Length: 481
Image 1 (cartoon, rainbow, N blue to C red):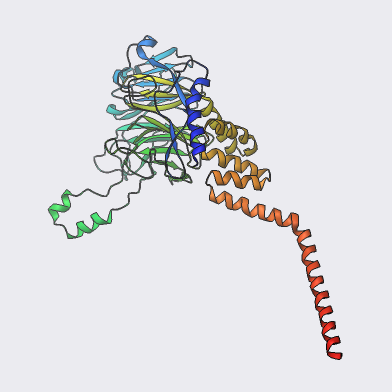
Image 2 (image 1 turned 90 degrees about the vertical axis):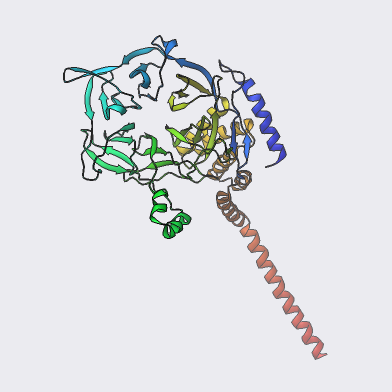
């Protein structure tokens, strides 16, 4: 990375917030950065800035108490699971209360929630609630009328004495219900629409520590009993895209693969082609520890955001595993969190539910964030030429942004500008695409100059033949004389 690029990027970071209109603060309450090819943290413009904080008191419904989850429906309604108060608060996109659901009627009797911790709404705006302490999934209509209840599943694959304690829930377009449950290490529980248990998907494979394995071989029975078991870890949260792929996070701290994209067969098909693992922060203070993802949100067009509870940051990736940007933090100011619990998307705004402060923080994209998002969307849809204009704007704001160089290089490659593509792939440290561009450029040069080369080669051969003939004749004359 050249000093010139670093200085230009740092200047852009300083000036960007001055150029951004709106109600956002003049500067972000957190430091924004990204990692380059050498895995060095480099300064970057803030992709999002906080514009407001929404509390229960402000809404006129009393303070949120330990809110556990949040979901934005297809109609733009924001559903907040106010766990401590045992209620669901439905808000419209103007942040006005539509309704509050704190109970429902079942078999003629009024029932309430007990420490609910997960919430999801489907295409019909049916509300799925992980009613944790009541050990059930409650399905309600948008108005709060009971549709059905999924309770203790029955199956031969479940261990004897199994207790169903749901924590998080999501639903696909076929109305299959996916549940993260406490103490379940076999994977995500899957149910039919009617509540029939189908089995597990996405079991987390744990790699053995062969040092521990060796010590187990030579240890006594008492020592073995004290050693940790080789059991998988639990999932922490999940979301689903429009193709039916389940995005899930696990709580295996320090794992290289804390995010998974599960296909219908339960296989992890997440692409990890970036410079470094899709695992949040690369470097961190030992006192803080590695990123621990507690929520994930599919943004569309291959992008997804993961919420790190360790340092209160949101990491956003594209479909190939490139880290696009980072923002957020821990603190008391607007835009940083105490105990972040959920991340959602409302239009172009991102929402973060802060359990510790009992509030929802609303973030709006900056010029940098908007251009990155648009560039990634166009690239994902196969329109690299259209994406080029956005990547060029991104570089004006952050000259250190390697992904933008690669994006422009791909656009140049699509247009047949192979020589120019070489330059951008070199700047973005993309060896694979550099090789592709080099082969094409070499073929282009050979094709362009092949006629000239062939003519020159033919002429050289003819001149050499004439030279040999003349030389041979001269030798004969000398001998005859």
